[in-house]
Length: 300
Image 1 (cartoon, rainbow, N blue to C red):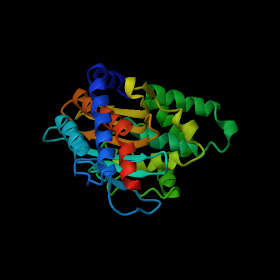
Image 2: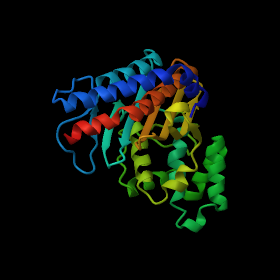
Image 3: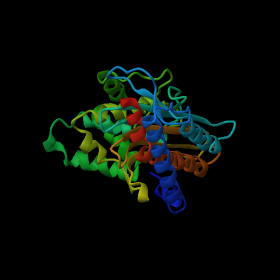
Image 4: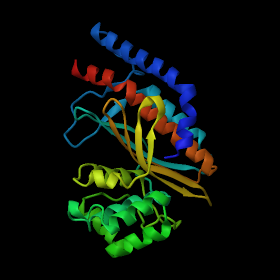
């Protein structure tokens, strides 16, 4: 995570966000209690119960507009974002929070290492192997985002073909132009879509290896007073700049966000990073205060 980018907002925004969050939640609960309809800008769950494996659209126009504005600020006419954000609630809720061209394949940069690591994880067949030399090697590779180490990790598994085999074995549908050239994401010919990465992270989340895998990911720590913990992999390419972030974010209200944000041909690495940092802050802060009202609406 871009820790400096997230933390720079906290002193300015936290008190305001808390007030807005509590006020919005309180207003929605009050309206529901009075039998009033909740407006289109309020947080609601779309009508109809989803199937067990489906994600309910999160209908909150203010939230969507905020994210659109954030990503637009980090763009120019050449920029292509591939974004998907899902949330798992403390009571089994599944929300599709946001997407933008989520099935469009772009340069993933070092978020490719998520694919590489999970491919290598298939070689770890028991808990006793957690903490092995190979596992510790992967931790170092992810911690320092070392490209040579990533290629070594992939070679253990048999190369790029092993990653394609992994995707097939877990029934991860591949975006139309998905192209895996290496294990590091260094090649400009790599192509992944946000949906590819979110599917992968969702598979990992439901696995008994999630704790060990998540410990590979750099942790941004607690995001100031909003109490969000982020474990994610960054990605950066400096020529024809790409900036990316994919992983998990936990909120103090029990929601877990699974997300991938890939910005291809952003105006600059800094502008792309700023957009991603702002978006993660917005998402975590929203779920920290608003979802209790949303689930209250759904229960009425």
